[in-house]
Image (cartoon, rainbow over all chains, first blue to last red; front, side, top):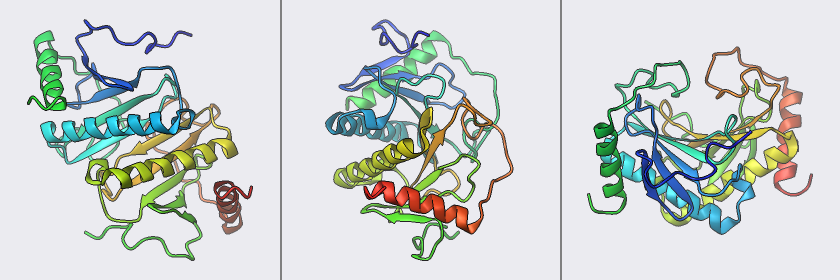
Length: 139
Length: 139
């Protein structure tokens, strides 16, 4: 079975927000939960404890930095951080700003199926640019 | 509203596995997913980015250590790591060994409701002692 995260995102991927040291940050295609991002390890690895401590710490600082940026931009009631990988083991963090107004609040995002919400190319670009600017301190 | 994780677990809590530097480790009462643990911050805080970097790094090393121990004991197909807090914001990591034989595999544990699986006091004690021993290198 091929890994959907190998090779990494292409530079022209409309969902690519930033290449960080350890991970690539992508906007999730389904924006049912606005601001939902995926933080994808740049190398193929499946568990935190398979990483060397320095790499793991750097990854977790990226998780933290992205969560802080999404919280500042989207003003969620709570950030959700999930590392699952049951279907796609290649480490990818689900970082999801949760609003009290969202359909499933306060339950986990997986509690009920929903139709994916796709944006127009211009709307994807707006979100990507806003998150990228906040991440690089140019917001 | 009172926080169910303040004050912290009592020493005589049958689910308490270990007090680590940053978190308390508890067996989840519902053992529908065998080995499911909660790693609960010893202080009341709700987001990773509210922690100082040193404390956050220490917390994440505890998350990592516990995940490695659960993986060694339960031999899951995948560890799941989730920090949600929509209902109880006080940081508590859900650390869940997932088996390919479990009811919801490969979907997230929240995909469908299930009746909780409670153990006998002796069964809780067996799991708690086994995880504690592995955590302290005395397995």
